[in-house]
Every structure is written in C-alpha cells, then in structure tokens.
Image (tube, rainbow, N blue to C red; front, side, top):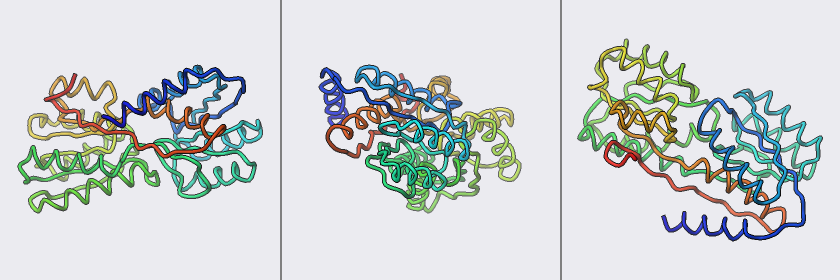
Length: 295
C-alpha cells in the first residue's frame, strides 16, 4: 500500500506541472471487448489529458495481424512513443523491432513483448497473482481436492506467468490434484463451452482457477447449469465489475484484483517521463478480493 500511495503522489506531482511540449503517443490495446482493458484505456486517457499529450487509441480486436498493422500506421504517423498491450507476446516482436528501427520508443503494459527493445514495462506481478489464487484455493479446500485451470491466450506473458505461479504453488499441496487445464483465450463464451466439456469429463471437481474474470464468469454459467454452484469454487483474475458482483452474490469465490486504471495512468505518465528524462519499471500491486472483503 505504501508503494501505491507513493506512486499516486508521484502522479499528482507530475500532473501539477505545466507543459509546453506537445507529444503524440499511440496506445495499441489487445481488445476493448473486455472491461479490464476499457478501464486501462480510461486511465490512459485521463493521464494524457492532464499531461497535454495527444493519445491515439487503437483496438487490435484480439487479432495479432491487425495489431501489427495498427502499429505500422502509428510508425508512419511518426508518433513520439508507442504504448502497446500485446495480443501475443511473440507476434508483437516484429512490430516492436520496427518501432525500434524508426527510433520510436516503446512501452508495454499488462503483457510483455518477448523481443525488441522496450524502454519500460508496466504490469502486475502475474506470477505472484497465480500463487495467490493457488494459496486461496488450498485454504478453502483444506489442501485437498480436484482443481481445474482455465488458461488465457497462448503466447501472452499474462497467461504464461499466471499459470506458472498457480501451478508452482499448487504443487506444494500434495492433496490438490490439477485434473484439467484447458485454453479458453480470456473469453467468457469460450469459458462457458470449455467448462461444460470439463464437467462432462470431471463431474466431481472442487475448484476452478480462471486466468481472467471473463473466463471465470463463463465457467460459472456452466457450473450453474450443471447444478453444481454450491459444490465448486471459482477464482478469477482482474476484479472486473461483473466479477465483483458475482462475489457479492456468492456465485464466485474470489478474484485477484489488478489496477487497470492506475496501469493506464502509469503507462502514459512513464511515456512522458521517458520522453523528457528516463524510464522505470512499475509492478502494480495485487489484492485478493473474496466474499469476506468484497465492497
């Protein structure tokens, strides 16, 4: 919390300065069909307005090819800096390298690039978030039970890191068995379909960890339809409004709360700071939201 307060103080100090330079910054988001990234965009827009930055926001619609084209357009526009939230950590490398060749600095947010030169990366500690989810499930199940993991988009650093933390921590509990691990691409509809299939193969599971809330909410619909809402706990990641509401209703057990608004603010603030001074890596604090502390 102290780090968060210091970060917010830094933002206030930066925002309080009058600026004469006019910078143009591109923000390429993986998708705006997810409340998490809408909130991230809103934080970025607010920061840009306060800093006097012209912000060009582009939606890749979860399409790596479209994101590459979007970034090429930003390069052709000769923007001062590009902020990118990759649809795929491998596919984005060529775009980052193109920006490097054009002399345009790049900042990544939420998801990393697996190559190219990035001057700053802003993200939650996704590995620790995965560990938090595993520890909480172990606590609720008293260290015994059958667990399912719903995986996000393959190739994204978020999916890789959340899975790494979750599985490493889960392995510390011999009584917890990971009986199924399937991809649902961070998508609610796919979370529903995948969960339906898993329930057919494993009707006696005890817990589900979904690497984001959209998949978790889809899984909950499948669990409800199967009449097992009282038998299976679901833990998500992101703390989007629908997930918080599901926790309040008792349909969802917990979610790992990121701070997308602050991440958006920091991305733009760090863009300004890099264009004038330098770069800093900011891990954004996580919080476990449960039925006991949900507000």
